[in-house]
Length: 462
Picture 1 (tube, one colour):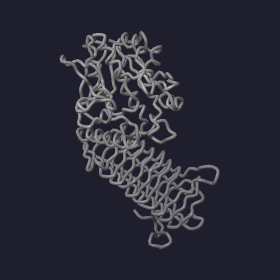
Picture 2 (cartoon, one colour):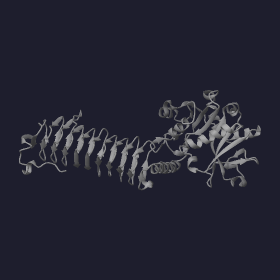
Picture 3 (cartoon, helix red, strand yellow):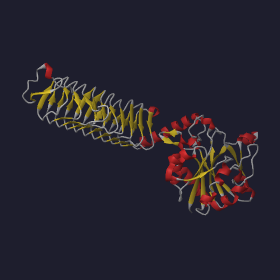
Picture 4 (cartoon, helix red, strand yellow):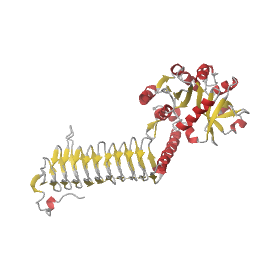
């Protein structure tokens, strides 16, 4: 059987108290709506239909080609919202799955159970039900003697006996497509709001002598709908727990899951340890046997095997195998630590490469810079890469030794094996093997023969 999906995303979201449409509020780095779209896409045979209202253009720009969009110009209830999708989906599939854009924790597995139950159901409809102590405002599921669902009673109008029922309607459905499209415009008008509710289709089916089934779950987290920022925080906590548990079961040590934040698109290798207060965001990849954190933020980075990141911030950077950084280091966009490279405390790289085995111990800034293998960058080294209009490149070749407090005024090249004395201001290229110092720095002799005990020529620290 072919399956299609309708995702309802047209709600006003007034309780969020925000200019941003509710379904675009971020959860673990992604807009809410993207969770529902990706989950539906894993089950359906046609592009899901997203019913939008407020902020339709912004929602469409976010989702793009991953869904078909229809607009519910006037919000008149969930039944009316599904009706807007009839023209786009009628005749396209055998079953129609109906979900919500503000229920980001629904899993593919749960929705697959719902679809499979409807495939076996001779009747037109299967609902998703929750058994729990907290109703969260859901309607009560009323069953007949045979176990079939007869109707859903909304909490606001339920009798005390009905309120005692602990099986709730989650508002997620799988319909026989033919029956849905033939009956969705027959939903009775509900007063006083004058809206058309999808829940009434349960009683419509039962009144026609048709069987309504229910798939029951006890996972209340999955059923969490986002209506306020309190709900958003609850969902974030539940999603964080779900993601962290998945990685721990896959062989990652998370020292304190309560203070570890891992977004859905992050991947982590086996035997890696994540220390407390660490945030792994975006499309970040971490290899095996790494140590990351504590007090670390990593965004859109690729980290190899056996790396160490201690109390640092990494954004759009690459760390090759065996490299390390921190504490208090900052890798900005375009930064790369090559294999075995070391970057110590209070260092910063921007669009710069620290070559294999190179060392930059502390308190230095390299921007638009290429550092060769096994070069040493002394404390306080600064590349002056911006002239107020343009950025310029610095090249430090293999084995070069940059003394403490050296300023490299780009564009400039320091040749292979060359050295700069402490406090030098380098404004011209330095030949390979040469020693320069002073302001401005001048060639003083061969790096191999110069007396290194002269205080004025002492180099940088490791």
